[in-house]
Image 1: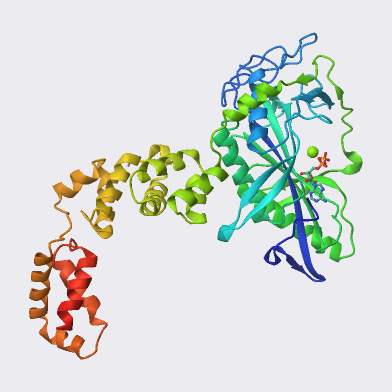
Image 2: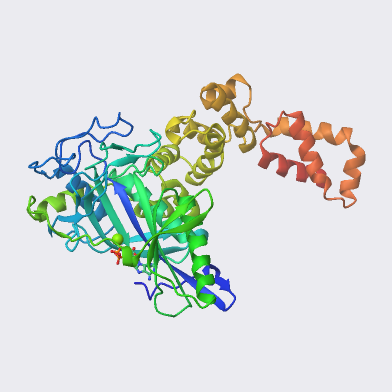
Length: 492
Ligand code: ADP
Ligand code: MG
């Protein structure tokens, strides 16, 4: 709960009058993955021609009746279960009344006092392997509005109703977050869980995930301050910027003896600042009442239990398993479970192989290559079994880790398998002690002066000899063997 959540000292902001604590609660609108809308059979695909996916219900024609889409309800329940939340077997749809050009019915069907999902939890993954639980207040189902297009005509605004009636889940957090960083961690974790569940694609650019940020400040230990709500911030980076700006604004205002008015604000990403949109006095009176066209939603406990039994392994459980079974660090496990595709890829690479080595290769080399190429893991030029083969060649000493990087580069460029490249280019590691010894003898003979210096106490020269032998063997001498043999020989 709010009062229990303590800010880290490093999260406090220093003002003229001392330290301030930021308090944040997030309201996230997540578009439900469903082919049809919440109360009509119209399609939901992104990017269609305007007004081609609109039924009479969505257009608010008189006399049209909404019919609940069971799949959307199932998706909301699945999400609630994934957030460890109470599922309310009895919930109610209400009309939220307001007038806007892109809301043809003059009201939005939403849930108010009796939402489908109650209290739950999200665990934040923070730097240094720290975690923190953040409370979920509720999740409710509602319809999206249409879209006003202001930039299509010099004097007119057009309305596209394709989005009208699409199912949204509004997920509300407790005021438990204490910094822009925590808000970012919350959104990332929520998005990760939604994607694992397949209930929202989490695409913020396309508006599938939109965030309202409630910000207040207080002196540590003081009661909660008055909050401002920043509407519809559409990237994690902008959420961070909006919070930093808004907290500073509030602190300066309070320190100058002013008062915070509860209001709705907009974030202007171009200027990096928030602006007042409407004050509490001008807040809407939504005149909520139960929608007379819809019966209360009654869920069957056995149906909910079946959905629960079908949930995939979620990021937290997977992370714990990776740490336990594969002995991975919190950080590595956290990175690997962020996306289901990455976790699956890793498990294939690690299958029957050294799991830590596999983790290093996925996180450093593969992610590096994907970043440089601007590709996702699904588009990886090196498949999981192919990377597994490479890791296997390192483990069984066929090639050194150093050579493996060259082999990997060749795999990225040619799409050929690791073993094939090693054979083709003759990169097999030299593990024949006789052959390595012969090279050492030769190098020591050519650099007799350096051998004498080394024996006279100039230890640093060891690296020089390693380098010479490596050069002579084309980098293929087994590093561990080379070190051991060289030490012995130089000792005389
Ligand atoms: P409303 O219905 O007006 O949106 P809610 O009580 O539902 O109000 O709160 C909305 C969001 O504001 C929630 O995420 C909640 O955690 C957050 N919140 C409430 N009080 C504060 C506060 N003092 N500071 C920051 N966030 C707050
Ligand atoms: Mg709200």
